[in-house]
Amino acid sequence: MPFRESDGRVWAEEFRCQGEEPKLWSCPRVPCPGGTCHHSGAVQLVCSAYSEVQLMTNGSSQCEGKVEVNFSGRWRALCASHWSLANANVVCHQLGCGVAISTPGGPHLVEGGDQISTARFHCSGAESFLWSCPVTALGGSDCSHGNTASVICSGKRRKGYWYLGCSWSETSPRAEVEGKLALKCNFSF
Image 1 (spheres, rainbow, N blue to C red):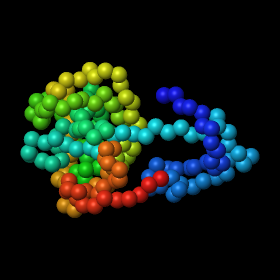
Image 2: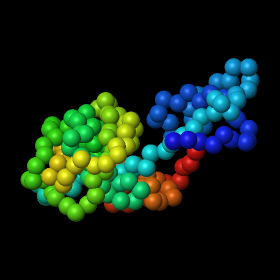
Image 3: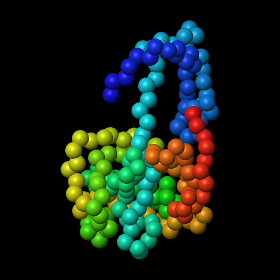
Image 4: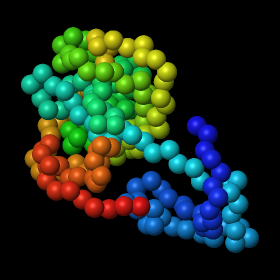
């Protein structure tokens, strides 16, 4: 993705973030060598549009089902051919459902008329949220509704489990308790 060269000043510090900081200003910073940074070394960001994850279940458990991500305000299923146990483990952890036991496919899971995402997540399994994983946006979808990603997690959703997420279509993050909006949060970079 091409970026235009900035005509403004460049911040003369390096941010050394680990990835879990709530704000950019929470990251350790060190001065740029020589006290200046040039436009050719300026950071260019692409923010992820994937912000929430849910499991579409057939009623047997809130901790198993078809994996869907919210992309720009629309829920989309993920393709099973690009799905791993490490990815599933992150989803289970994010939803408060323990660890991933398996990633089954097939018609026993909820089917739907929703769209299928062409995103391929590359999780190690240790991430706290699916959107913390590297993601590759693929061209066309080679996936059908019978080949969507799914997961069976080890536990039941914990009562009072707090999920802090940000819906791309909203202006502020929100906190949910058991899937219900609990409060809107205001924090920014």
